[in-house]
Length: 212
Image 1 (tube, rainbow, N blue to C red):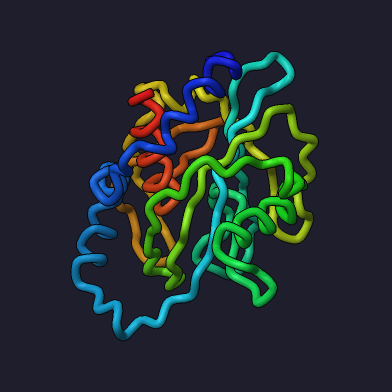
Image 2 (cartoon, helix red, strand yellow):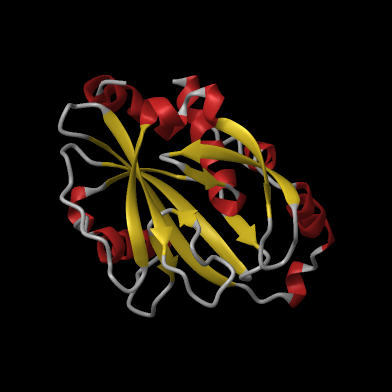
């Protein structure tokens, strides 16, 4: 979709009701749904994080979305695709501030160049024990992105048309740090399988965008 068309339509999201958990469940692995139903949150004491879904025009004025491939490390989200973002720090005013700061740190987009359009539905991630608050952001120009060497293996610039294409909603058999050979709903984007919490948050974004 041409960016000017997208930009003119995106403001409609500000007043739209969030689909929330119903959208999350469409991309939730069955093992995750079962786990969430059994969790006693009063005993978990989760940490908090903020992430940003940034849409922007590429040099051909087509709309794209920023995702990142995380570095390989000793952790449950090693070498997975996600949004720019991370955990709260004491200097952050709120989770919106966290998401903007982390996006600048991880992909080099200045905080003041992102217009935050909407706060999305927060999501609990059991393996890492985090509440994650996603935001949808918009840029008016093509960003010059630089991957944070310590955190980001690769920046993925996803075409909006690919994200909204039904053919890229897939089912994949995967092994994770906590389960072996499980069947999961996912997206196929830029040659990567995007699933789990990121897939669930993308599902809500996709549902909103299809409505406009």
